[in-house]
Image 1 (tube, rainbow, N blue to C red):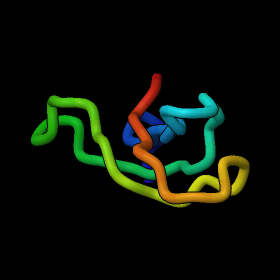
Image 2: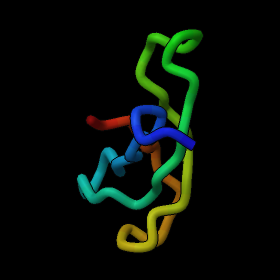
Image 3: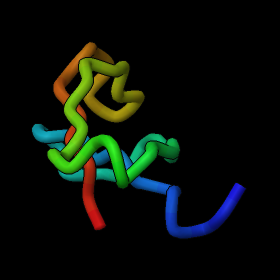
Length: 51
């Protein structure tokens, strides 16, 4: 897996980076958003892709 396909997912409430993932940047141009569990907030929150 190449390094340029890796992304970080940050919690929108506490602003902590909780997850790392990868995506195909040629086909998906928009920033990724998904609802994931935040262990600091202790609930499911929206996580957005960061640089």
